[in-house]
Amino acid sequence: MPADKYPPFRTAQPAAGDSGPPVLTVSALNQSVARVLERTFPLIWVSGEISNFTRATSGHWYFNLKDDGAQVRAVMFKGRAQYAGFTPREGDKVEVRTLVTLYAPRGDYQLNVEAIRRSGVGDLYAAFLQLKEKLEREGLFDRATKRPLPAFPRRIGIVTSPQAAALRDVLTTLRRRAPHVEIILYPTPVQGDGSAQRIAAAIDTASARAECDVLLVCRGGGSIEDLWSFNEEVVARAIAGCSMPVVSGVGHETDFTIADFAADLRAPTPTAAAELAATAREDWLAELRVHAQDLTRALRRTLTEKAQTVDWMSRRLVNPAAYIQHERVKLQALQTRLSHATRVPLTQMRHRLQQLSTRLAHQLPDTAHARRDVSDLARRLHGALAAQQLRQRQALAGLNTQLELLNPQRTLERGYAIVTDRQGRVLHSPAELSARSQITVRLAQGSAEVDIAGVQPRLD
Image (cartoon, rainbow, N blue to C red; front, side, top):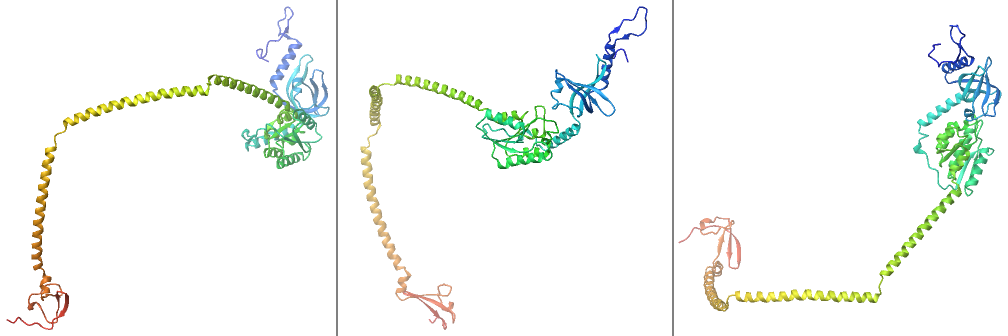
C-alpha cells in the first residue's frame, strides 16, 4: 500500500545496523486493516440469523450473524439499539445496516451495526414507500386539507383493540386530563389477517354515526409487521374520508405509518394522542381562573375610574337655582345688548331717511303749472275727439244710405231678376242663351232653375 495513503504507524525501532523496512506493531497492523475494511466497504445491508445474542449491562448488543456457510461477529451500541423497535432473539432472521470493521484489541473482524430490521422488512419498506408516494400524488397527505382539532371536545372516539395496552393508556390519560369527556370505543383487531379492512370499517362506522368530535386511531408499538395493518391503503382512505378530525397514535415515536400521514394530526404514541385530543381540564380551569382574575382587575379598575369621574363631575355640579339665576343674568345682559344693537342702527337709519327726504324735496320740480296745462290739453283733446266722432258718424250714415240705394237686393225687391248660366255667369243678351239649356233666375225671395224652350232675337 502507498506510504502516504494512511497516517504514519507506530513502528518498532530496528536493531542497530539493520537497514530493512520498518517493522509494524500488532496494534498498528490491526489499525491499518481496520481502516482498509472501513474504506473498502461502506454502509451495507447484510442478512443472516441471530445467534449468541447478549445484551450487556451497558445496553450494547453483541451477537453473531450467520447463514448456512459462515458467521461473523456483530455489535450494536446502545445509542443505536434503543431505536431498533424490537429486541432480537436466538434464531431470528434479520437484516442489518452495518459498517465492516476490525476490533483491534483482539484482531477480530466484526460488523458495527447501525440499524436492524426483521428479514423481509426491506420488501415491506419498499411497499410502504410505493404506497406513500402514490397517495401523496393524489393529494391525500396535503396539509391544506388537514382539519384543526376542536378546542373543547365533548365526545372522543377510539378505534383500537379492546385488549390493547394502548387502550388502557389512552383511557387513563383521558380520565386524568378530561374526566368530563365522554368516550366511545369502536373495537377492532389491530393486527393479523383482515385487520386492515376491519380497522377501516370501524373508522367508517364512526364517520357515519358522527357522534364524536374527534377520533383516535391507535395501537401500541411493535415491529413493522405488527404495525402493517396501518400501512394499508384501505385504512389511509378511510381516515382521509372520515367526517371528523382524526388523530393517529400508532407505535412508538420512531414508528411512522401511512395512517400517520393520512390523519389530520400525528401523535408519537397513543398516550400523546390522548393528550393532543383533550386539553387537560386543570389547564382550562387555570386559564379560566387567570381570565377571571383579569376581568376582576379590569372591572375594579373601571369602577375606580368611574368613581373618580363622578367625583370630578360632582365638584363641577352647581345648585340648579344658582345656575338658573346665573343664566337669567346672562339673558338680561344679552337682551340689553340686543336692544342697544337694534335701537342705534334704527335711529341712524331714520335720520338718514329724513336727510334723503329733504334732499329729494329740494330736487323735485314744481309740477302745478304743468298739471294745469295737462288738464287744459286733456279738455281740448276730449272736445276735438267728440267733434271728430260726430262728423265721422254723420259721414258713415250718408254712405250707408248711398249703399242701400245701390244694393242689388233692393232692385230685386222692385221686380227685377238676375239670370245666370250653369257656370254662374250673369247673362246680358238673348244671344248668350240656347234652346234646351238651363239657367238660374235669382229673385228677391229666392232663385229658380229654368229650362229654355226657345230663344227669340231682340224685338225693337
